[in-house]
Length: 126
Image 1 (cartoon, one colour):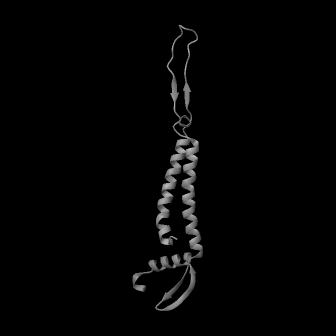
Image 2 (cartoon, rainbow, N blue to C red; image 1 turned 90 degrees about the horizontal axis):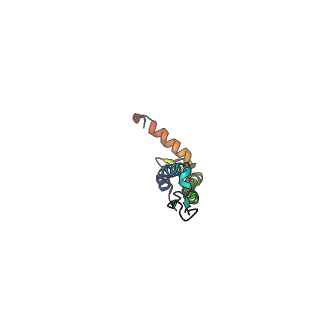
Image 3 (cartoon, rainbow, N blue to C red; image 1 turned 120 degrees about the horizontal axis):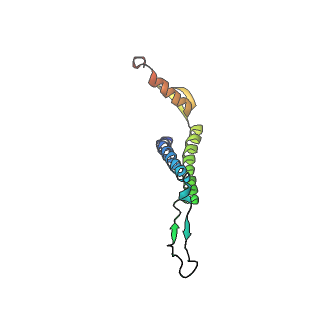
């Protein structure tokens, strides 16, 4: 199982990639012309009628493909975020200073708060 610091390290990259890929999907879906295709062949009405060339336009974006990719992107994002959040809920640590235990089983959120508070203290106080 991955450690919390590993999860946090990849979370930011996955979030930014997800936002980018979702924006690309939305942009592709905003252009209806990319979603439609056509194939036509013309026959003259009579033997001497004008002969028109066939025309075709391929579908450039398939909605099913966009839905599949969006599902994969969101699944990965939700998985990483949920893993981090559940780990934060269960992770606990003791705070020990000079061999004396000040806090037992402190939750991660409180440990992060303490870390910020100590970092903000003037250097001559520590």
